[in-house]
Structures are given as structure tokens and as C-alpha cells.
Image 1 (cartoon, rainbow, N blue to C red):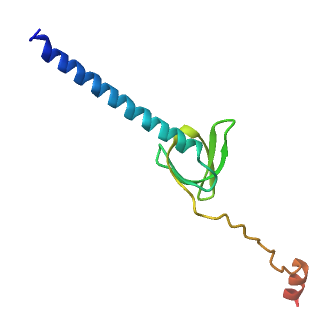
Image 2: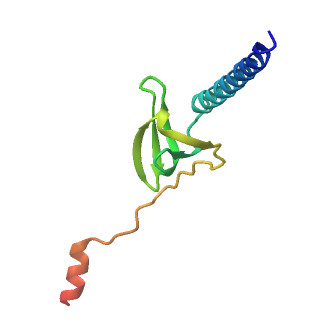
Image 3: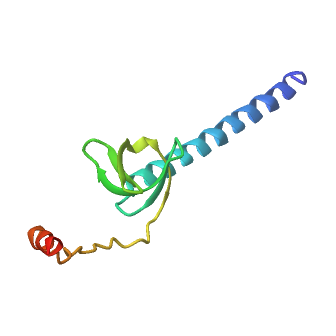
Amino acid sequence: MAQSLPMLFMLVALVAMWFFMSRSQKKQQQERKNLLENMKAGDEVVTIGGLHGVLSEVNTEKSTVIIDCEGIFLEFDRSAIRTVKPGTVASVETQIEPADVEDATSIQDETKE
């Protein structure tokens, strides 16, 4: 009985370590799941490949996201997102008005004279 006591302590210690490690891993998995589910357009993201961009669209049916990377739109799986920073950037739409352009023929007539 005296010889089995140290073995019992080691077994209890191993079981306790396994329990806390699995609990920590489950907690990390749940946090990642919540992070990926709560993404929305306008959030700044970094992919697992290191690409930085802004979420343009989230497609829940296909489980993909479209990232705007300085005007280039790329489609990624949701699982390819490493970090998400909530976006504070408001989308600003600018209206481009056409400049007053003279008729090309009137310009050519002026240069002939």
C-alpha cells in the first residue's frame, strides 16, 4: 500500500493536468467560434497568411468573406481569418460629377483658325 501511494499522486496530477488543458482548449475554441460568427462588414481583419484588409461582405451560406484590400476584393473562407478588429470606419460614398467637356469638334475648329 505504501508503494502505490506515490503512483496514485502521480495519476491524480496527470488527470488534473489533462482536465485543465482540455478545458483551456475548449475555451479558446469557443472564443474563436464567437469571433468568426460576430464578424460584420466594416471590421478590420488579418488572415492567417498575413493579409490585412476590411471586410466588405460576409456570406453565411457559403461560409466565406470578401475582403477589401486597398481596392482589391478577395474571397476567403471564414476559417482563414486570424484576427478581427471591430471597424469604426464609416463607409463614405463620394459622388463624382462629370467635368464640363467641350465638344471635340469645337476645339479642333478653334485650333485651325
